[in-house]
Image (cartoon, rainbow, N blue to C red; front, top):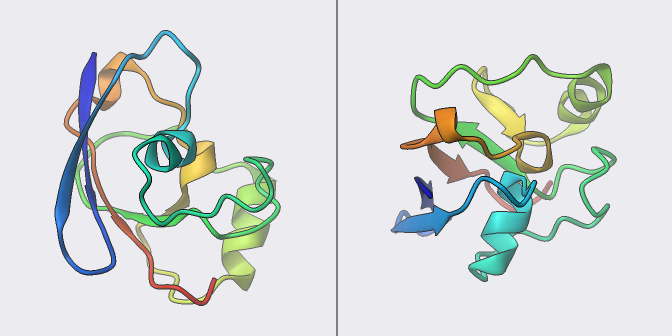
Length: 105
């Protein structure tokens, strides 16, 4: 099990506990905890409704070209922007801290 902190759009912290052996991504975890993440495309990196800001220093896998294209079209993009659906949960992400990007994606 790992713990991930998600800051919602109201600034409230949510500590999410999850196993890493189910193949989940961050978007799916947020949805399971009923956080306001739409995941409209179902995790295919075709929308930006799971856009987050990575606040911790964890080393994430490189962005795919699809993720870069979608983030290029998203609102409120920062240097630490990622799509939650492209962050696959693994043991090395224990302690990850992210913030949900503003609505308007």
